Image 1 (cartoon, rainbow, N blue to C red):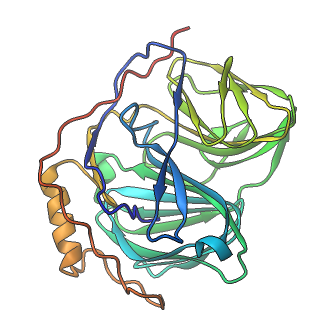
Image 2: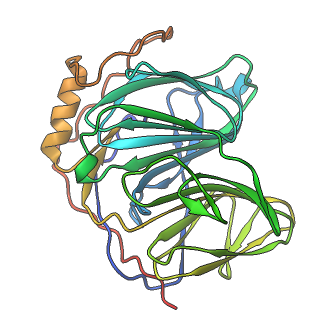
Image 3: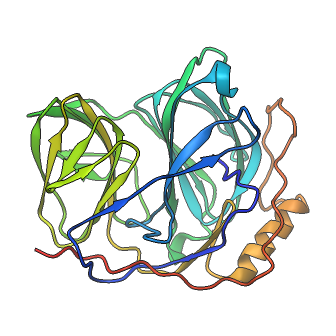
Length: 328
């Protein structure tokens, strides 16, 4: 998904080492994507309070949206650098085309992971059969060693696993004894969990990871702290077990985890880089139709490609995460 804000913030993100409280709540802000009938998403990453969870650097949560009312999703070809996009749906279907030559469908419970290191572009369009669109769009920052990685695309349909009190799908990393075969450039965790009403679940987790729990439906009590729908509960490193308690109705959460990223990054529009100058170069090359990003074949909408927004007048001001370890 493109960041369709007309005035996207220019952000420097980094990680630290300790937090003042055990559970940190990241509240969502609503971001309209496009015109008056366009979708509105709830964004929890990045924000001033915290910019990354592991290498996860962007989280948009949308729906359930009636596409007759919103027009659904129709995002023209747009670029990415220095990141991977992870598309995950609960309801609906999206047609994906990219300059790596991939034409694929995003369907509920199936991961589409696109790598746009040095440069890639893609389009996303909800299909005519879609009446309700509901899902998350996630970005993963690539470490310096892979920042200019070649274009890539992985599709994975994780099995549904049952555990006492609920069920889930592990699309990246390992949890609940299940491991995704999809490779990652840094240690990561991505999962969808559904808890039965009032279920109490204790997750065994990697203590080197920090974790985020994005509530999609219902309510969640995370290590004693209540998290509302659309908000994200954060826990730092150093924990071996995390307690989840579902609300009175089924609770569905997206779990994001990983080792603290440890590298400072700059984000603006659809680009992840290390310096202001790299952002300027990527924007200029996209506007100049550089072969760095390639071309998407088969997209029939208008415009045929998204123009980049104007760059901000000011240079980047560093912004860092608070520390990442959770007090015991």
